[in-house]
Amino acid sequence: MSTHSRIDTTLYLSAAAAVILALAAVGWSVVAHRPPQQYAAGERFDDIPNLNVSAAPSTLIIWVDSRCGPCTASMPFYQRLTGQTHRTRLVVMGREPTQDLKDYLAEFGVRPAQIISVGDRVLKFKGTPTVVLIGADSIVRAVWYGRRQTATEEEDIIKRLD
Image (cartoon, rainbow, N blue to C red; front, side, top):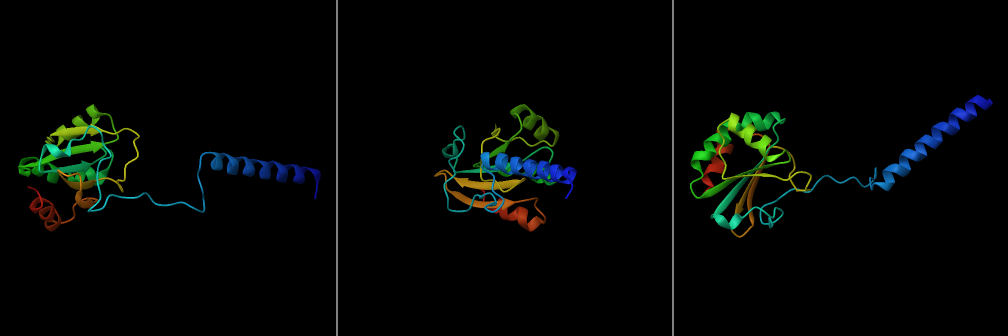
C-alpha cells in the first residue's frame, strides 16, 4: 500500500471515528433507536401546564402544523367541529408560534377555545394531525392519527363529543 493510500485511509477512519464519537456524545444510538411513544386511551394527559381540561366535561385537542398537507386537508372538518363542540372544549396545539397558529386557523374559519404553542416541548404526538379527546379528569378517551379519510371516521369523533 502506498503512503498516499495509507494517509487517505487514516483520514477516512479518523473522520468516521469523530462522527461516531459526536453521535455518542449527544446520546444517539444506531442500535437502540425507538419510535416515539404516543398517547393512548386510558392514560393521563397532563403534559401541558397551561391547559385546563377541567374547564369543560371534555377537551378535544387537535395537534397541527401549518406545513402539514393532511392538516390543511382536514381543516374543513375542524371548522365543522367549531360549531359542534357544545360542551367539549376545542383546543388547537402546535410547535409554531401562537400567532402563526392563529393566522393558519383563521384562514379556514377554525375558532378553538384555546390555541397553545408548545415550542420544542417533547410530547407524545405520533405526527400531524392528531386528535385527542380528554375527559375533565385528564384521562385520554380516544386518539385519532392522520387525516380523516371518511365521513364515518369524522362521525366517530363527533358522536363522542359531549
